[in-house]
Length: 305
Image (cartoon, rainbow, N blue to C red; front, side, top):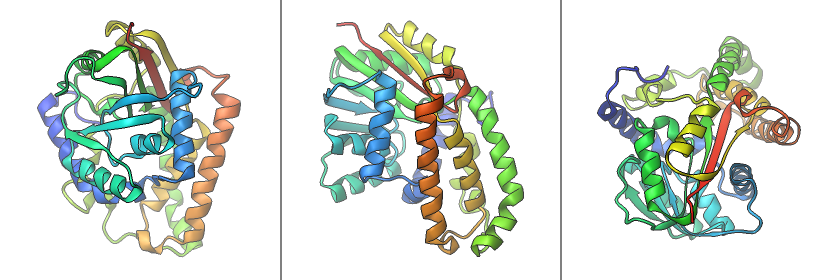
């Protein structure tokens, strides 16, 4: 359930900071975030889809909005797609986790705790402004997009991936409900123990998960934001249909079990099957169906030179 439509921007930001601070240490495990070859290929392909190709291009100074634990930016840094990274988030806990991961991977990353609507950077400081699954958390998107354009150098790119579509949000409710019904049978099959305390009740921070989302987008919403902010070469595409339906089912049944009781064999199957369905979506559905039908939306544009 998303944030109340009457929630103030201050409340939304406070809830997001507290929830993500509380979730930071378990976030990578909860969402199956990978910083190896698989994660790097996932991220590279998302950026290629958003931008309409890379063609061997790299970006000197990259600014990530809502970096979280670094899934998107640290994988791009490892690939050399970004040479220098400034990672931002409203959650200090997430940025701390990102810094620890960067150090473990031997990467350099500058972190800044800030809101997206008021960035503490000089005009024309970056070659790309990007993010993953972040726009739906930001209260004032018009102001944020104006800031993204301001800090970009002429000819610089904006690219955001993993944004929930309105249609996809409704679709996700179906596998969630089905998985909730099937969860007891699944636990018996894999011999997992029922979670003693519901995930949403483990702490005050985790209980806020239902309040952190503000927007579910129609593709037209993202096209308008790009246009009104003055970006050129605007693109909006869709990503993941089968993969997200399956992924939400997996995530729902797993959330009902004690994490240490879920067998490694199941985790391998779940991850590999999700990746396999991603490939089906990429090859079969994404090139043929309109963006509005997919669970995730990708968007990009270019600041005029």
